[in-house]
Length: 601
Image (cartoon, rainbow, N blue to C red):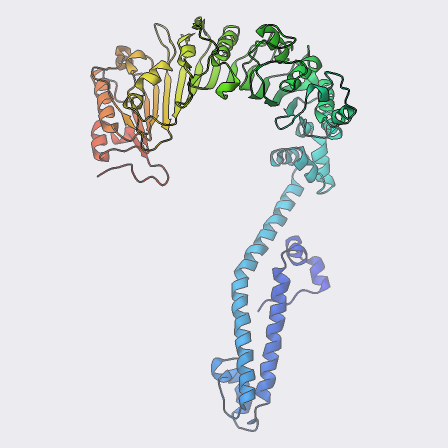
């Protein structure tokens, strides 16, 4: 039986966590108190029934309570009991046993809930005892946006002081916010750097709504008044010197021609006038997520050349941003920014073939790369093939990227594109990267049904740019994924081209093969540069390929420091692998839920 609730005096001196459980916890605790009270009532009823037995004068009656109190034997005694009394007694016994069983079930759940409440109370005490600086940092990591911050400010006065007093917590502003909240964030953030987000990807409006062109529609002013992006732009532009990063999520563009009074690129045109010649002395990162068509056709009513189109689309080209280092663009080719030293570019130019001229987009990208010699890291994702307007052949001029150290190319193969005869490999062939250190090539294909497509060796080689006479490549990663499980690709890697290779990673749900007569670069054999090989998800040819590369390295005496890691690969036996690689240098990992690693032991 649980203890009775404490009286008011005891409750006043009870620990904080216990008071919280009793007064403000889950309703299961009062429910148990009611059940206990009901049990005691049943006990008293049973006692009264026993006292009303006809045989009260029998010599055994006075010893009945001590010997048979609530025992099964005592309750089952029918001597000197009427049938009605016995039925009432059994019914009360059944109800009491049921309630007792329910209490046993509820006890662990109640204890767990009580412990949870106690933990919450202790957490509250811990937060309450933190120094103000640590409390502010805790809130900073606990809040995902300013709205969470406002919720925390309502806990108590100390939380409010921490939430409203730390400037860095108010430094992110978005066009989704009300104008009053944007002003509050800018004011509360003090002189901290700002993270600005134009979240307009789901919006629909035209240049009439933005005020680029005067409209005769009497409702246009009402529409214009509802556009928060206008007020947002005005507010954040006042603090442009504090911008650290800025993101633009642009509305969908439905046309490849730029019209002054159209709806397709109205926000670009409006921002060109509103955000021109800004002083962005703190800006480090710029991101633009474009949707839909690229304006690569110049038959509009006020733009007669592609340069004119870009001058209106690239509203950021006139910014003064000496600290700008990182760009992230989607479905839009960036323009060079005067005075900026761009070191990182993440670009995704996958778009519907009808929405862009693939060759023009790649040519514009080469122009940007040529004008950005400071580029250090390039992450590029594209379709393998696309449309090209016109029948004239197009040849790209070579572009040398002296400072590029890291390159990641992800290519999506779309074989169902009819007429998509312009290949991404034409762009790769024009690149000259003599100082490249890390290269990652990733191929994602729908299917490779034909025999010619199943061997992806040539495809992989066509996506490796020209690394010069003396390649400095140290890290090479090749990933090939085919959606159709029935199609298993085959691939071989030409390692004779890379004398300084230190790390090799291959992910291939297919067969890893060895080209007859292939070998390693002589310098690699002698310099002991190759330190680790990682094979991931390779289905066939693992042992043969490892045997080949081990034999090549053994001839040069470069096998002692090589580590081989196998992740989810198929092979005949682990013992055969240990004959090639010492157990201390061999690591085998099995993917979760994957029992196919060893075909037979």
